[in-house]
Length: 184
Image (cartoon, rainbow, N blue to C red):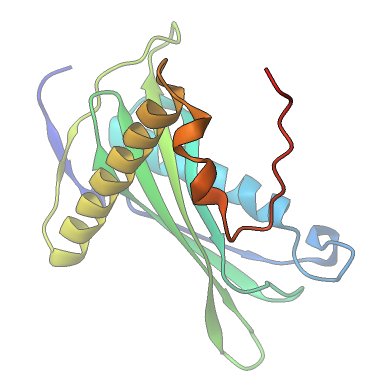
């Protein structure tokens, strides 16, 4: 792929859906799994629109459920590409629910999906760069860089061949955990 760049706005997507009783859980709130399904769909659409390729979900880095969604509310999801790597993109999604009778809107969820572009043979392919043209987009890009670095550092720290529990046991003091390891 040629070295192209596309603006964030070119792949920004918004969808709205009325929440029905069939989407609810046993407590009468909208089931988190249903919201996750919608999040995955909009992340796919946003990443595919940016890359002009089929995309798959590589990871879901954050899903913060901030407020419950009620049956009868209009849910709007807004997605944008916040970061691009070589073959991957981080799609940020904001979920809002509106009471259609009162007009009151609440922020219900924020999520970050890492999507990877694939060719027709399922091979990962390069994605276009990102043109960011406002301070909020710069902040989102930097936030994604920081999340990626923390994720890599954590993986290195806890999957390294020299990892030793002895270096961490004291860190567990004050947590609601009881350690009962067998003697080796």
